[in-house]
Image (tube, rainbow, N blue to C red; front, top):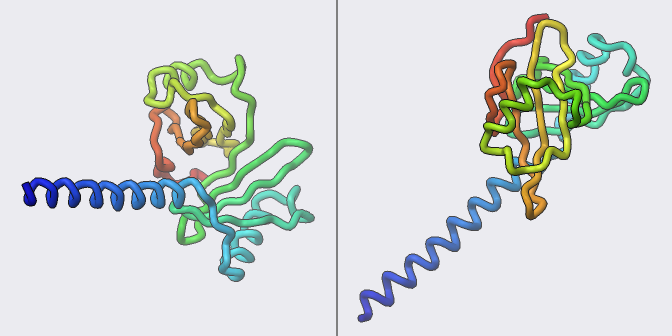
Length: 168
């Protein structure tokens, strides 16, 4: 009887630790951190301004994620996001779009077949670089939990950004 109680207690305590670790991992994946490395922030800002002079008068706020760095900005009332990898190399820029009837049919079909199909799209971004195609979405489940997902040019969904070098 003591052995059974000991085993049950062990299982309960173990599951509490696992749940807490999972919650912390999920939070770190969904919560961006402001970039604290000023030299890296200056380098990223300079590179992005060289790529797009329309943002030269904007002070950008840079964030660090598990996959690198990103910033949000606007040009002519359109929202954009630019991503860099962990080494500070440019990855892509994306334009925010509405998840509506204008969404490419192949992407909507892929989404409807994906594990995320039962969630609501709360944010949808399309790569705006020439010679590159891809998507980033923020989806929410019925409890309001937000998940970040990416789709490559073939509509393959992933919980991590797709790999690939920019063609410019």
